Amino acid sequence: DVLARMDAVEGKVKAFLTITKEQALEQAKAVDEKIAAGENISFLAGIPGAVKDNICTKGVRTTCASKILENFVPPYDASVVTKLQKEFPVLVGKANLDEFAMGGSTENSGFYPTHNPWNTECVPGGSSGGSAAAVASGSAIFALGSDTGGSIRQPASFCGVVGMKPTYGRVSRYGLVAYASSLDQIGPITRDVTDCANVLNVIAGHDDMDSTSSFAEVPDYTKSLVQDVKGLKIGLPKEYFVDGMDQDVEKAVRNAIEQLKSLGAEIVEVSLPHTKYAISTYYLIAPAEAATNLERYDGISYGERIDGADVVELMTNTRSKLFGEEVKRRIMIGNYALSAGYYDAYYLKALKVRTLIQKDYTDAFEKVDVIAAPTAPTPAYKIGEMISDPLKMYLQDICTVPLNLAGLPGISVPCGYSQKHMPIGLQLIGKPLDEATLIRTAYTYE
Ligand code: GLN
Image 1 (tube, helix red, strand yellow):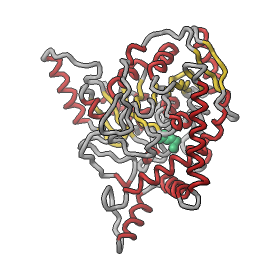
Image 2 (spheres, rainbow, N blue to C red):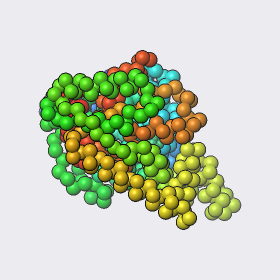
Image 3 (cartoon, rainbow, N blue to C red):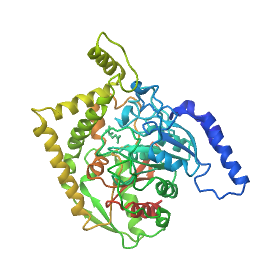
């Protein structure tokens, strides 16, 4: 069973920041009673799930993997958690992440790094590394992650599981601790596409508590679990097969695309010419929004406090000692880009390029139904290998951040292994609100 499995592997994987075993056993008992009473239960009832620790859970510590929220216990559930609870899953714990979801390896956690279950010397990816590692190691059957620039898809690809970032606004962000509000989106991390469709069915849909959440009707995603890509036009963007891409990744992804072709899909070359500006655009917009969102951790209204002689010293002590290095780096970049003298040159410029990136996709989607690409330029790398070079880390996000800038849905499905036996992910990108076609394509391929 899942809790026994967790006991066996968690010491090595360290996917969780908080394990809620007692609560889980109580929830499981309640489901048993429902079954004994002959009640109809949903497919998610009794199924063990993990929630990324930047998603608020009432009465259960939610830290964002930051010392500044080490003891924060939310008085309310995020809307996704409320929606899930109605199906009576068993929530086994809160999954590790890069502090405030800033990073791509879970090494930036303020507490400890998570290890990749396929090779514990490697990173699980990030920032939802704990969620992906929990599912890959069998400590949870499904997990929720959040994706601002790849944080669901990239760890899914590194851990050999399925991860979907829905369209911006498809899933409520209420109760997700904000990193970059115009990019953040919650989504499922699961063992296969069927589970992905089932979890998405529960969490998608309008929520009055999130003013950016979409009113669009939510289809039943399990209806898309059909093996049929005949006539589907799949775009192949040449800009995504970047220089320096790992050979094994390129081979596995091209192979996957060939398979989709042999199943009846039509492969069409497309061009997304502004992709080369996506990293610089993202790393201005995301830190700018992060700097603004993180202003609230002042040592007074939220979280932990380190005292000082006066209020200014209190704030300085709290923020400089309790935020990690990467978080401070982003706050500095963000405030710089937003400051009076540089706003037009950096932030405003980035917003304009964001529009061009969106337009690239709009043009491409006139010709195709889905775009296929790698999820990440490499498989999982060794812990410690990349962390000392933030710029190199940022460049790793090239295949994932453009979607967030454009608000589009994307899914990562396992498509093979590197020579060192580490999983590789195929990324499928969809039209706005067209998660259904992504599920159908991924399901057919899987
Ligand atoms: N790696 C990217 C970043 O550090 C994406 C993170 C995310 O999606 N939360 O910003």
